[in-house]
Amino acid sequence: MKIYISADIEGITGVAHWDEATNDKPEFAEFQKQMTAEIKAACEGAFSAGATEVYVKDAHGTARNILASELPQEVKLIRGWSEHPFSMVQELDETFETAMMIGYHSKAGAGGNPLAHTITTRLSGIKLNGNYASEFLIHTYAAALVNVPLVFLSGDEAICSEAESFIPNITTLAVKKGIGNSTVSIHPSLALEKISQGVEKALQGDLQACLIDLPKNFHVEVIYKEHAAAYKASFYPGASLKEPHAIAFETNKYFEVLRFLSFVI
Image 1 (cartoon, rainbow, N blue to C red):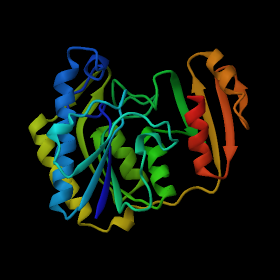
Image 2 (cartoon, helix red, strand yellow):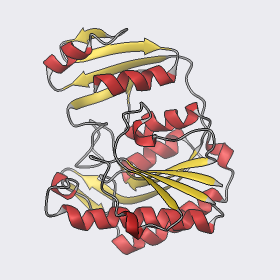
Image 3 (cartoon, rainbow, N blue to C red):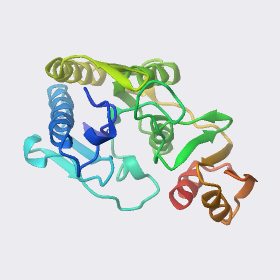
């Protein structure tokens, strides 16, 4: 069984401020270790459930955060950004039985995490078919494009609720709740136990029950904080300037959505 794990940091246990998620700040080291530990716990749960291969994508910031030596020896770690449109699920393809997300967070404009955003803090948000999109949604659709179901997600309470509404059979673990500019988290060690147990349970279930269908058409809006960025991005082929801070794009192919986002963000 070949497993894919995409890992972010804003949804890691305890993280409550950008200084704890930024690798040039002294507070980062503690949460880098927790991020690594939560990924390790997910890997161990996967191997306990019978996984034979596990790939991990470091999908935060520079994509050079995870302490590789702390992971099980069997794990393959994807570091850095290739700039492929799959982005946070780079290298995911049809050879994987399933995918999981660790440390994911609320979307831009949501109140479920002090660090809520979608892809970059330079945006006010991304709309997909009329609804604000999270990194979870964007990359779950990418997984569906290659027929890979998402069966487990950990992160803040709000993104877990979103995942459960979108994929009723998914297993989630909320390690914290955002309240204004604060978080309430479970104990870091308890998070590790629950992640390992949750991943093992998820992989022992009906994986295909978590596979979603892609919409037939896609209307995408990217809303920028700076109007000049929207103006520049509006020259992407097929894009249009919807209003001073926003551009729009339509297609019936989801890969074209991902290609569009990779060039205009």
